[in-house]
Image 1: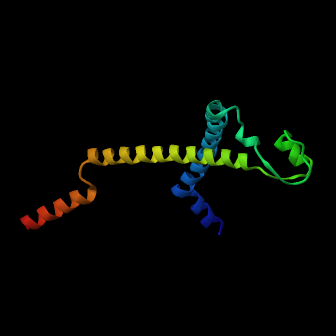
Image 2: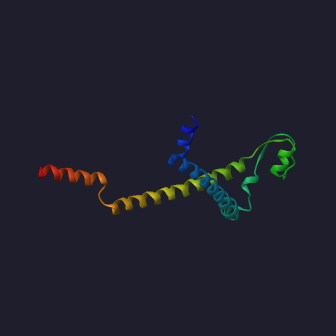
Image 3: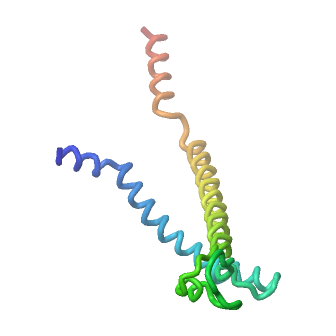
Length: 136
């Protein structure tokens, strides 16, 4: 069983997936920083000085107006942190768009590489077989 597990882990697809997960997590951190440190301040400058991540609605409990989200939660109030949700959705949309661009670029590069590569091995073998049939 252990040798089967070792063989499973040693397969290229599993290792590629592990690398992809690690790179994806690091890339997610970059996108979060892009959103929080660059895009959200620009949106805040256009629509007013707003930090979406701190916007919430009190569902139950006594919270003074202007209290931070962390303080409202610490007081035991039940809060709906809808601003944080907006921030996460914006992060997701940016990440999805960047991944779309990467996949689109990779597909174009793969297509060009296939065009440059010439006939496939199967095509060459088919040509050889057909030529041998003609001769013999």
